[in-house]
Length: 421
Image (cartoon, rainbow, N blue to C red; front, side):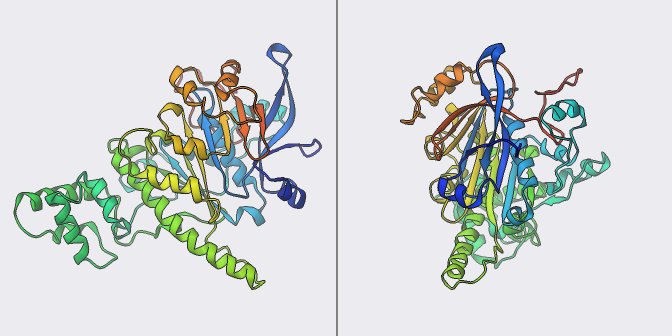
């Protein structure tokens, strides 16, 4: 790869001149020509050293989750001097990314054709809900710990959302009274005991809190949110077993997003002071990339959503404090417009839905003669192909995403196991 001149994406010319291709991800190769005459050209690299908003689109089965895995592999392959200053928090909505701990030996021949070898992701930590830990362990599935949260870290709004009530309701008023009486840290049991009275609202609040307790997600001695963002590590948080409660999934994303935003805002001030005083930057709180599949569930275009607001904040002002997003969805028509307009890198696999293609019509920068939806419609059916649009370098490319080096856990269940690419 280094013997050829790569095509850089997301990296400003000033940074490219100073640092070259250091801190960039090997995404794939540009496709030259069309149909049977198509050939693979120069390698395509994606900048990971600075904050970006990257959107990954694609119809089911055409490589969306696969591409997320490729990017995560590339975080793991960065030189330590860069990787140690970055933290990746991957919201695993399907519970499939634990397989990255294993090499992709199924596609060894394909990898060899790309001058790559099967390789497990070394710097990934998998956290699963405490309630399913026994299943993972009994089936010898790799897990690094239980994902638990401190209930005292949730804001009033997050508690109201989680319990399905509002500030003006009797249950909401009771909840605020309980939270005001407790000094952090505290557990769910203390919250339940803090509910006074036998009226309907009090009984309802106790019942809802007991349901929350049964999830085994909240503990008084849970790690701080910032402990899930570790320099040099990919923290994979499996929220797939929360499928029965979309509110719970949203609270997880909203809480992580809010607390990490607060931590990075404070850390950036310290980094700026060190710069002014000509002192080394400590990077005690690394730059954070949050990766979310099925992003339309957390930032829907319509209806109420707790996590949408914090994701908008990351997209709009995250560059300065060092907060980056990679959002993937097979339904761009259901994704919040603000996130689409704030993105600077688009990676789109095949889409066929009229609504999804129409949602991309607004993505038509002046340097592209045709709309993104029109380019996607001409892309063809080959898996792993993607239209890549980069606002930083003002490029539009057809790219073949490289094969996965670690085991892909997102392929369709089949009696005949086949490679994606």
